[in-house]
Image 1: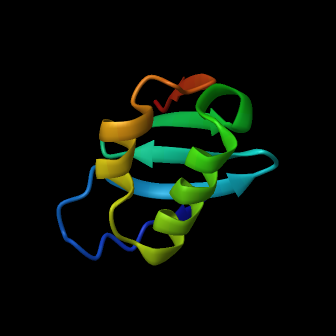
Image 2 (image 1 turned 60 degrees about the horizontal axis):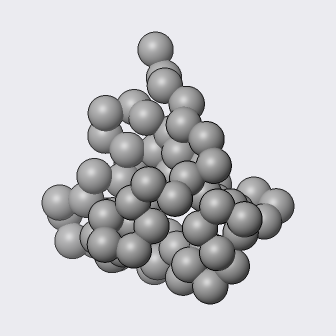
Amino acid sequence: MESYKNLSGNSGVTAYAVVDEGILVRFQDGGIYLYTYESAGRSNIERMRALAAEGRGLSTYISRQVHDDYAAKFVRD
């Protein structure tokens, strides 16, 4: 996974990875969520990818637009 730049300084996102037809997002609590074209919609995934690359706005976008629209959740020990 690539470290999230967190340009705003207060994001809950710590890392992300672009995957086929989706994006993995790791949050400060260690949870990793997989959002896919199927679960969240292609336009949302493309926007999330752009925000992740920019390093700003991803956590807010997730909480406002796709909150529970993930395909899978992984818990890191």
